[in-house]
Length: 394
Image 1 (cartoon, rainbow, N blue to C red):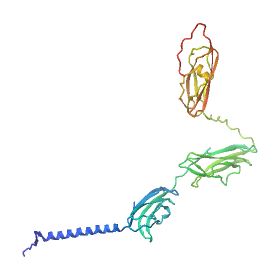
Image 2 (image 1 turned 90 degrees about the horizontal axis):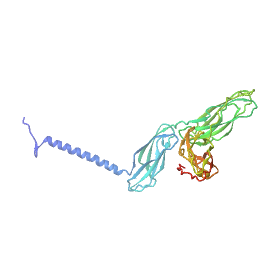
Image 3 (image 1 turned 90 degrees about the vertical axis):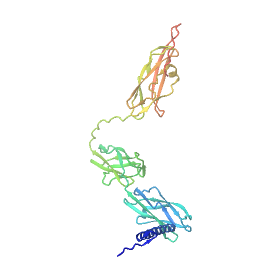
Image 4 (image 1 turned 135 degrees about the horizontal axis):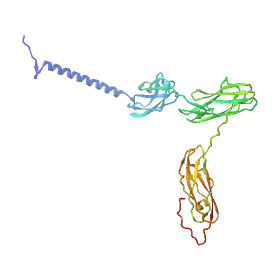
């Protein structure tokens, strides 16, 4: 059987078949693209972006607003409605809508997330036309997280009144309630628990509904007035803004005999800045008029629990005229207990006794120490002219 070959313009039957298949594929692709363009052209509006994830948000607190752009591509659509739909729609709220969207224009929507429970939440932002038909929607998601626990401290951390003889008055103690973080909170004073001894009473408190910044404190005064012999205990509590109670244990012993003497207490620390001089006053030996004495050393010591930098106050006329100050300690940073050495010279300008004062100030301008100066002069022998003396600092 003879094999027949069909040709057309030099093409075989197989070539013609492949050409027809390729043409059909291109036509199908063009139809798909055209259909997509028609769908897009038919959409009267779109949202940019199409979804928003608010991330983690503390339960009961609102997030920052998330913004969407609504593009109105319709030539006739001008009145729309924006709504939140879905099982968790109560967790999302529209802060700004586009109820009067201009034709062929864009407007901005704003949505806020306020979770009501600690789990993942989701809803849809839906744009409706005047007939209530959904034009476009965007996905809204976020996760509610529990707020961090509050830290409330008490000063003192435990309150013990020790022993008290019946009928010997009612001692009181002030308790400081301190916000240890991590954020400001509103405290509520709960008072004593129901099982507390009636020997303890709260005489005054300044904590109820007070907002405490981190590190801030409020106070409550507690009194101990037992009516029966024995050990008395109580629980004092303050609730934070999450409703969690923080407690302080209180105790005291009532006796019929005089209480045991308490061990000697340490003296309270000094408060405020205190600079002492040694010696004070500084007394100079008699010096001829116009001559400068050798320097005398005075020690400045910080006798307080404070830290400060010193400066020298303006000297009085006597100090400026007759006493020369080295100013070696000016600007010196004093830690508690630290010292600094200063030099003072005496240069009498007249033949009499002289007195003066040098005051030292801290950074706030408060005088924290005063050095007194005393000296006397004697006239130079007749016919003797004092030699010129070098002028020291001051």
